[in-house]
Each structure stands twice: as structure tokens, then as C-alpha cells.
Image 1 (cartoon, helix red, strand yellow):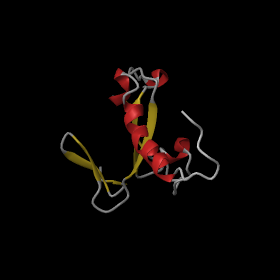
Image 2 (cartoon, helix red, strand yellow):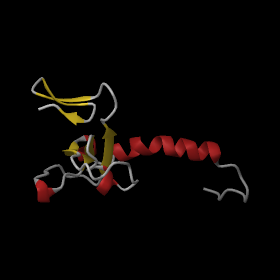
Image 3 (cartoon, one colour):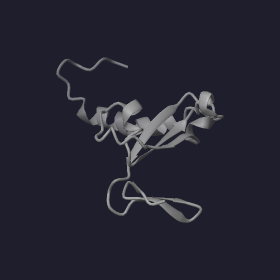
Length: 112
């Protein structure tokens, strides 16, 4: 493949590549599409996203999941080249976590 000319507009090809990245990641291996980690953030001392998953996944009122590789040190069994962390804000009105059909957290606040 030829190198792009200096000053070439790579906007469209770069956007296309970025749009394909999640699909490529999920197709890495059989374990890439499996849940590798699940957690509920419970640290009220972390109040805002810091763009560092190790902190963000612990924010009180969030949930965290990872697709792909599980962490064997904490009981994870799924094996994959991928470990894709995802943090979901649950402090918004109308969000909830249910266990066995019972709401245990609503709008980021525990109700049990």
C-alpha cells in the first residue's frame, strides 16, 4: 500500500477505520464477545470521570463491565486477547439495577 501524500486528507479513511475497530476487536477470538468482568462502582470519594478506567470503574453510581478476558486473580475464567473496559453512568434519572426482579439501585443510589 502506498504512503499517502504529505497533506493528504485522511479524514474519511480514518473515520472508516475507527468505525471498524470495535468489530475487529470483537472478532479477535472466541472469548472476545463474552463477559469477562462485571462490577458496580461504590466509591463515593470519586465523583467525576478521570479518563482513567482504574478510577472511573469505581465511581459510586456506575457499573463497569469488560468484554473479553476475565481476571483469574478474582475468579475470571474467560480467556481472550481482548479486555475492553466499559463504564456506564447510572446516576441519571430512570436508570436502575435489578437483581432477581427487585430494584437494588435507582438513579445511582442504593435502595436496599
